[in-house]
Length: 396
Image 1 (cartoon, rainbow, N blue to C red):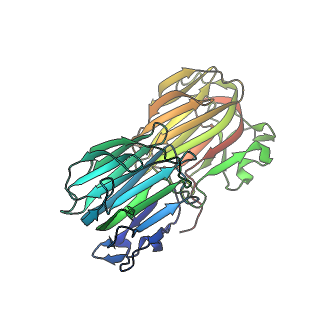
Image 2 (cartoon, helix red, strand yellow):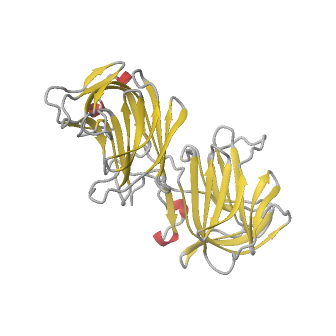
Image 3 (cartoon, rainbow, N blue to C red):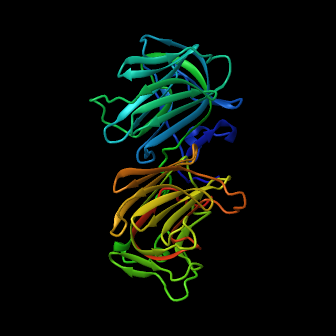
């Protein structure tokens, strides 16, 4: 089992409790008579008094939420009794970020509901919960505050994150009986989320470290087919220069070092010095290429003279934006590997959108490349920093 990446996954089929998983969940247990029971492909959580809680929880620093967080679980409601209409004996709670924005999905007999504020029922949906195991997904957009709930693949609820002024803890995910005002029994077959910090899920290199990316920790691999030029390190950046279309000079990271979660973010500060791409309008001498997952879905962001652009397919220009590229600027590429959406921010402003695509002849995946990655252009660029959050450095 590999205990790394950005997705925390537990399943009862592993024949272990969540507290024994990788990563491990902390057990919250104030139940006087019951402990979690692992049997028949699920973990049963049961409480017998309103004040009792029996749940599994993961908190900071293990939880570090990105802009979008997905919670996915399979469970069956068995029974409950609540003395408050905004509680049941089975639920999933989550809180993220320095402002502690939060919500909770509660599962009742034939109904599920979110909160709209502390101790206030929000939107609800009448769905079967006790007849069998069902698959639930909670999608949280921390940027907009939107919360979306899917059951067995169909959207059934929407709501919003809210703030409780008295809260003091954040970056928490918890499932089970978390009510304090109800009792209940529920069975949980699996639980995973995409906000796990992992064991080194972020790669960060900066020229101010006074080390080439190929000598950094973790190490970037240098691809160098430039006949006369090598990377030149200065405190302001690493200069990469090629002088012919067929030359490439770039840094890359690939499996087993790269394992992409549901969301990947690439951040870099770069400057285009010059570029010539007469051979192909879909290339420049400066770019960032990335591909993720078994389907090898990919795209590239190219920096040209006064513009940046994505691809829409192999060797096809996609969306472009007119921006200043001659000085150092900050770029962010947000990739949703689930939906395929690609968003580019330029100096903090959303500037481009595009999509991942598939090239049938590709055989490699899970890579991040930056520099002259074109094979159809040449140019000179300077790179002050580069980071991404799809790094896997722990051993299986």
